[in-house]
Length: 154
Length: 230
Image: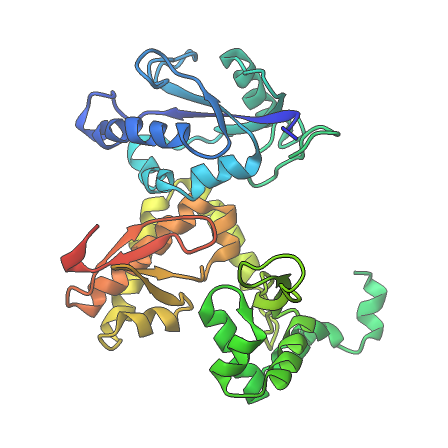
């Protein structure tokens, strides 16, 4: 049976330099292969992208250095496997060279009815919720996950 | 835990839990220890016949000891039909053994380094000090590598990694930092890679190159031979 809910994830990052700078070259070079890896990973459903094939030009925050990454997966396990147990991990190793440290939560997870995709505005709200209340069923983290709403397969 | 228990248990809190003690005690028996070692080194399901043969004991004796290890929580058992035959004549499914996922720990006097490690990792993560942690891990690895013999496998084994060859890579079956790596994957896996890179540098000769090559169920680091990088 297909799951009734899918997992949405948003994460934001503040780049240390413009994307065309040498400092971000490694990040830019990884965009295409890692996005392709995501697209072909088990459990991948959807990700936010422009016609460039990524979301780097979407800057929805007042601070225009803030980039957003928004995606939907079939389960927490499938997202975790991609993020932390694929070549993606090797790229994240360089996060401090490319992105500023953030004190507020920069990643939020929540459940959406299967077949729906979240908006950037909704993702912002989930991050706000997580910042205000800490992890809960409506906005949580990998370290403190919450199960999908009742009656749904995980 | 109620404070009442602390008063009346006569200091039992300072002795490791019975289950952990029992598990460790079981391994005093050399046959059990050999069986456990064989199952762990196999890295997957092992049948009673395979284990008995590897250790050089009767199948019945191996079965007895393997089941003891399951009872103690050191191994996990499952049933599966070996071979392709189905239906009548396929025989009963075989009982297979593999290392249990849980951990056994006993420290006297009591030490809770895991708690300290969690708190330190959380603070390092929040401070964004990934690169400082990687530098410290690399230095520790270099020092450990310098003091060791030339065999990288032995060096890794002594640190709990359980290396095994896979094509032209040396992979690591066990993650010595499993809990911590689960909670802080980027931080701890990067530290781990720097540590193994340091070990290789410390050994001195070009023993190989450490790369991040994660997949579910194994350590995130692998070692490629210098002349055969893939």
